[in-house]
Length: 483
Image (tube, rainbow, N blue to C red; front, side, top):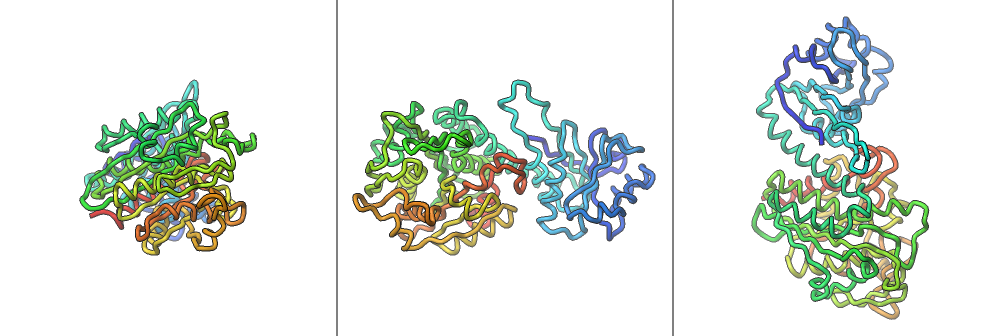
């Protein structure tokens, strides 16, 4: 990840910095001192640019770049439009503009007294590229030099932003990794390595899960040569009952016997997106030493067709004891999560549970690629998640639960079907999970199928894996679960 560094704003640095210089301006106000200095050195070029109709048409937070400006040593001068009393959204957009332009040389950002955290964090989030699978990767991205009035006061702010950005980037890297590189065993080994930053990690194997009765989870992976794993990460930064965060980790999803169409199946490496967010979140909590008690659980399986694969019509017993009729083997994520939810509730007696999963294509039909679906049995928790998503600049929308959806998944032969068909597909999937949450436990299900991997730029990421959820859940924990 590109480094975030604080330094004192010295106007002489603007003259001599060889990379990119970033200044801010508002066409309706006098130039700030950094922009004014650059205007003098460029013989009025900044003032002409800021006064132009093109600059005036920019949304606040967007910018204009002058290449190889005369009078400066810089390769480029980026001028960001930003009002003096900018909103959080405008500050985030400014950071995105800076990060999107980041190259292999360092950027000197003349922040002065502007709000530091949002601009720096989102510049770091947006300056991302995945090169791990390239035979000849490009040189690393240059650093982000944040020139501020008080560098000492800025250091803890940048340390916090670095912890979050690193963890979002980890989530994106995990989602991008191909299934022949990142499988159940290598992912579990990578999670075990998080003990180095202070997490306590347990890895349960097939035999241990069999003893626990996790037959729904195990049925999903029974046709794969990659063995199932359940990774449990403990962060105990406070006393009291924990918040449990659970992630679906289907490392590759063919659909099983209910085979998916071939076109686009290569993207099913992202079906472990919920697990990736959970791991990224747990890393962020450990890096920033969060004063919270949080346990992250990820169930890692691979859904493959084989002579050993479960079939449509099979009936499996969950850890809870419910008999699940498998209507479609491609509705597998809920089978993984139902055993995890029961296990987490029974073992840890949590104050709340939140699961994340790339669970249904139906949520994409409902909400597109800009908002995750939030299903919740507790209004206070739902409001907290939606508010945290707004604060983080990530899209979320509350979706309904109800008895009518439960009736849709009643089984004639067993207790419950793993799908109720196409109508209200995301709602019936969430309602299936709700059956495995004990009464009185606040619970939320976040369906991130539409936001985990996007075909265009998302809120603070280039196209591809977004890392959606790390920022939202971190913000939720700060406001609702920290002592």
